[in-house]
Image (cartoon, rainbow, N blue to C red):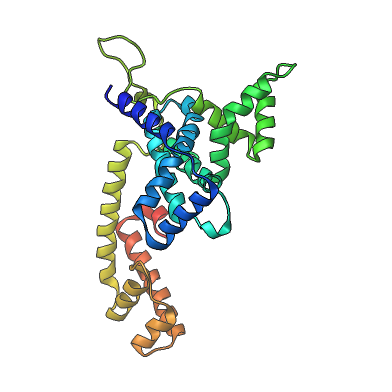
Length: 288
């Protein structure tokens, strides 16, 4: 309730601010750029707040607070003032329009939905133009099906038909909580999240997998006892580390050729396989 009077005061002050003549605007911009004159900055931004308000009004149909969008537009206005180059002889309003619009649009994309969307330039264009293009196409002399409308919009904005359909579904309704009940029954019922499909393994499968992995680790530790000291070192450094040593590097450490390392490794693997199968003949599928 308190934000509305404050918002009206801000709008009233913006409308009362004097317009700047081209020469006056140039002088103020030079003072701000060269001397960081805060009074010059204030005069420039105050004179262009009506532009911010006008721009924010164009996005009011997104259902967000008008005062918040004006504040975001003011941030864009300040960014434009920081980057403006008066020597280019372009009116400040022309330059600032892009920054104001970009700031407001970024605010809308961050706050319109809890689901982040419109991260690419084409997706942003789709988000902000879909409703306008759909309304225009729907007003034609002949009624178009959704699929035809989607194709027309996709062609106009250079996006896929699937992207148009997905964005249209997002814009057609508000966010829904996964904890929201599916019915109005106060006695307790199912939530939306109860019907989500998970591709993760079931709890009993996960526990079984952990137990099997632990058992195989024990089997491997027992089987390693059949290896000689050099065979064990080669297997550990070649097979049991995340970044296994190369044959050449390991051969250099042991003072032998890389071909000799390969031969010892092959023999050690055969001994390991034989030891594992001797103790666990039913696990042949896991011993390669």
